[in-house]
Length: 258
Ligand SMILES: Nc1nc2c(ncn2[C@@H]2O[C@H](COP(=O)(O)OP(=O)(O)OP(=O)(O)O)[C@@H](O)[C@H]2O)c(=O)[nH]1
Ligand SMILES: [Mg+2]
Image 1 (cartoon, rainbow, N blue to C red):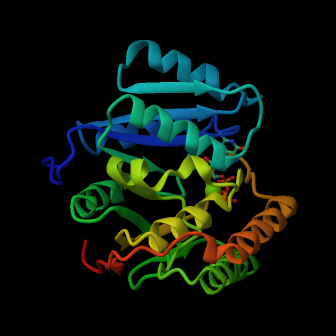
Image 2: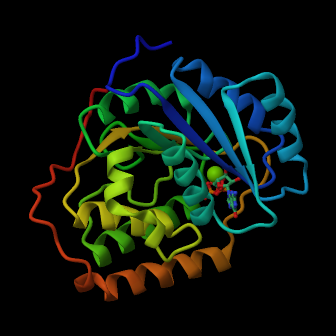
C-alpha cells in the first residue's frame, strides 16, 4: 500500500462494466488495496450476467464501494461521464478510469496517483518506452496501433496512447474542460477527451504500463464500435478549429521510471 503520495485526499476509481461478473469483485478489491484514499465506483449498464447485483451485495458491507446502475447499454463514454458527475458531486480530488477486465493492472495506480500530483491528467500508456501489450494476437495489435496513429495524426494530439482508458484526472481539470459537452458516447470519448485536454493547454503525463489481455469475460468492442469511433474522431478533427487553442503551454511528457 502506498504512503499516500500526491496531493489528493480522496480518490475515485471508475470501473465501467458490461458483463464483468467474473472480474468486478476481484478487481475492485485489488484497486482498493493500492491506497487507503481510494474508493471505487462501478457504472453498470444493466449487465445480464448479474454484475450489478454482485456489486450491490459488496456495497452493502463496504462503504468504499459505490454503484450506479443504468437501464441499458448506454456506451462507454456516457459511463465515464456518469462517473465524472458522481466524482465531482461527491468532492473527489482525483478521478481515475480503468477497464474492469484486468487489462489495466491496479499495481500501476500508485505511480499514476503520484504523477497526477504534478500533472492535470495522466495516462497508463502502452506506447511509451517500457510499456507494451501482452498476449494480443498480431491483428489486434495492428488495429490498436493503427487506431492510435489515426487519432493522433488527425487530432494532432501529443499523447502516445490516446486510445487508452487507464487515466487519472484532477477535479479542477474536469471542471475546466467540461467533458459533458463531448459528443462521442462510445470508445472515441477517450480520443475526444485527450484532444480537448491537450488543445486547451492542460498537461498530460504518461506512465508505461503493460496491457494484459482479459482473462475472463468477452470483449465489448465490435466492428460497429470501431467504425463509430473512427467516424467520431474524424468529426472531431473537422471541428478542430472551433475549439479555441489555449495560450497555456502544456508539457506533455512521459515518465520512464515511475
Ligand atoms: N457501463 C458500460 N461499460 C462498458 C460498455 N462497453 C464496454 N464497457 C466496459 O468498458 C471496459 C472496456 O471494454 P472491453 O470490452 O474490455 O473493451 P476493450 O478493452 O477495448 O476490449 P478487449 O481488449 O477485447 O477486452 C470494460 O470494463 C467493459 O465492461 C458500455 O456500453 N457501458
Ligand atoms: Mg478490455
